Length: 193
Image 1 (cartoon, rainbow, N blue to C red):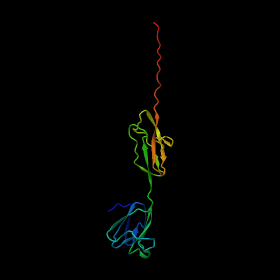
Image 2 (cartoon, one colour):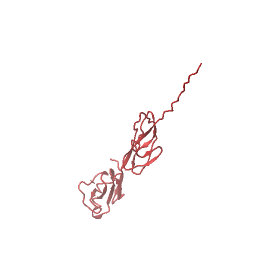
Image 3 (spheres, rainbow, N blue to C red):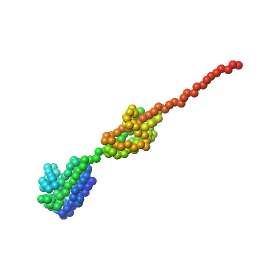
Image 4 (tube, helix red, strand yellow):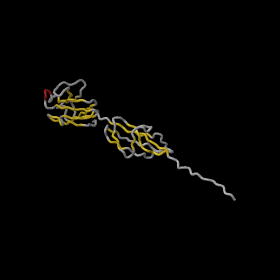
């Protein structure tokens, strides 16, 4: 049996829960005896008309259906839900939440590993900025992360947090040249003998 994100149990003559809300891409499983309570999708809250291509089940004890499109779906027991009977219910399918990723770019790094964030975040979530980790660039020191490779965007330094926007984001390592120590000047003088 497929995994269910929501389960509706039924006996004569009711569904429990009667109304269910899920996200698009999730599944609902009905559990009961379909031979005594055949299930079918109907096209409205008080309708007895099955829509073309709608779901139905009339045998067994478990039926799972995956809902991919947002909307409200109505269902009934063919025997005890017709004409406004008590075995009627609905499933509200919300648009699936959208999430975004954060990618880190070494931006000229010469060694080490770029941090990897395998999480995804919904818009508005707080994201923690990592430090440079093992990432290096010969002749340079890491300064911060920036939303633009050339440093003209928004800068973030660990352990700052930022609010996730409604788009994927790449943060680029920013590097400052290591300044060479000043040259020591040696003065040579000649001595008279």
